[in-house]
Image 1 (cartoon, rainbow, N blue to C red):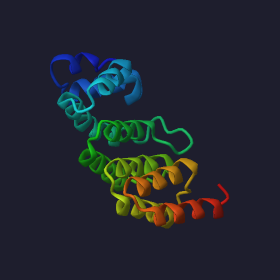
Image 2: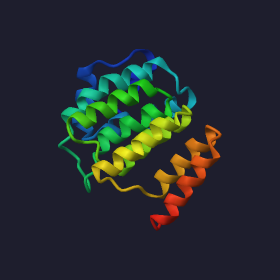
Image 3: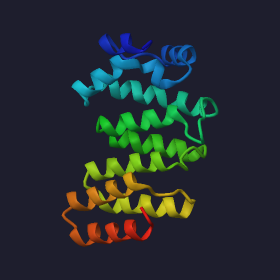
Image 4: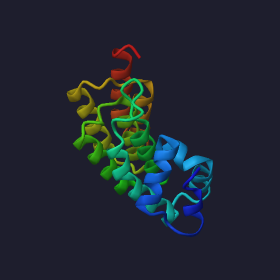
Length: 173
């Protein structure tokens, strides 16, 4: 990807990210396999965190581009990268920015946040996200319920896990 060079020695500037995203057409293509490799090998790499922070305004700016079936892959990739790299504070910022411009009403995006809450053992936040999904009319799917159940189990809350399993069954999933 066009941004891989910036990850090796220094954090890329906004202009470099903007140019790379513009050439590639979307953030995922701009980041490329080198980003994914570095993120997997050292998920707490400070360069990656800086890159993700710098990419946030571009994702919002490009929110009208590359929309496929209501999904905004640029913001989704950024949010997923934050959660996978354990940058939970940044994932909250990303989701807040997406909410501000109306990009958040998506099962995959909410589920990604729920996975992050599960990793942090924050069952209340995961359940709150589920309530928001319901209030926003965003459907829950099997992955969403599995992530919620995972959060309950990580928090050793068997009654909550059982209740979620029942909700999943009652919803027809």
